[in-house]
Length: 548
Image (cartoon, rainbow, N blue to C red; front, side, top):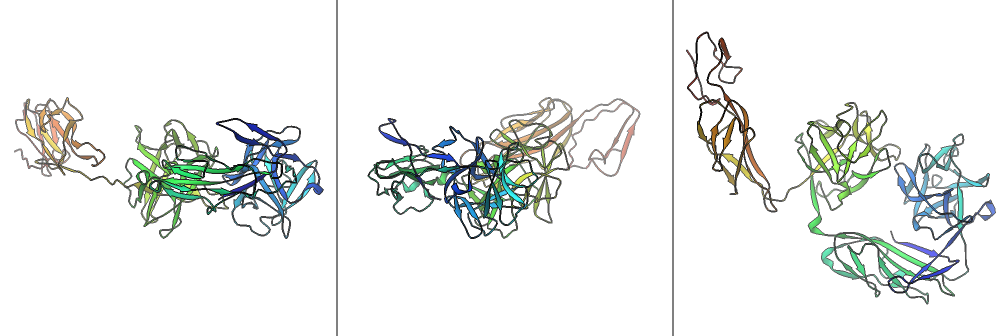
């Protein structure tokens, strides 16, 4: 959403940075009486922690501030709240985002004003302000000094009432700064190249433009935005304070989409979880238009979510914060990671933590597909009674580890647009069992469709080797995996085929017994000998062998 803030200035500072860029200040002074609490702009805080316009799980986030002589100079827009008289009390909002009271130790933010739950009554308690929710009169908006967030607590709680800092008025005029034709956040395709983001004002000050991320887009001093790469930036226009006008700035978020960076993810509808890149979501139903995706934000004990639209039952996005690598680790459990962030569980509470490295047990997961409900039960390897689930209750909306009481999840795997390659062996069909003969060779060449260079390998070269032409040579008794594969590139996927080769000794110590059924050689005979025996035959599980 577009943000428009009037910076009622007490002090004008001028800095020479990259030319003459105006810098100004605004002063918020502490108030202590109900008479001072009138409609206006405020910083809502306790000591050096102020309430932000973003959620911390099911609470409201807090951020550190500097307070000098009971005043805050030039606070960030994210902590500037408007307190406005309503029918039943007063509302608290930041650029259209309202504080919502709930009947629990939580609080939420909403873009919609709701009667009573978004209304508050203020009173003064020991030089601080107590904000009582109109709907839930036993709930107060307070600061939790141990958890460092704002939420609704009961009268018997040990939490902290609020300190209010009010914007000082200067009596100067509103510069009425606005963008021409832009009313909110926008999305552009990289191929669009550029567009006009010119602003107008009544102020006699020069409008200064800026982009917060110049790798994504730049803006010149005529208001022309040039798109450079996919990503997000904040486009800002500002004017300094003058003798007759207040300072002011406006801004909006610009998202630039690079089609080359867009990835398509397809729902996994069976238990075939393999290594790859996934989006892990809670999906309310099969006909849902959007999903709640696990993202990389973590409030210390649980992971946040991003709402993503579904297009033809697929997810198309360039948001890397929701793209997770599912990898089979050496302990035969899967990890869930994004860069150096691993999802893990420890303890006995409903908690999910960030780990910076894979930790056996805590960061291991089993993916169990529920065919009836078409969801995955993502089970922790260390504590198998804990599952990674989504909490959709009481506006808590979080991913954490539960005992199965919350919502199981759906997987969307990145679709590979490259051409698939099928590799097949020309003369080999299935696993092979041979009796060892020194120097014995056979043809294990393969064909790739479409035609691609093939690389051959044997997992145990003390059992058998394979040449670049696909000729296998027996070396000794044991088991090996013979594999034919093609390399992946930007055009083709990896292709592979393999089988297990078992090579048995040609002589044994007596007495010797073999169960042909157990050995996979037939269903008709168990052979025992007391004499000297040597085998001089090749046996394949595809052949019938009888010893009489």
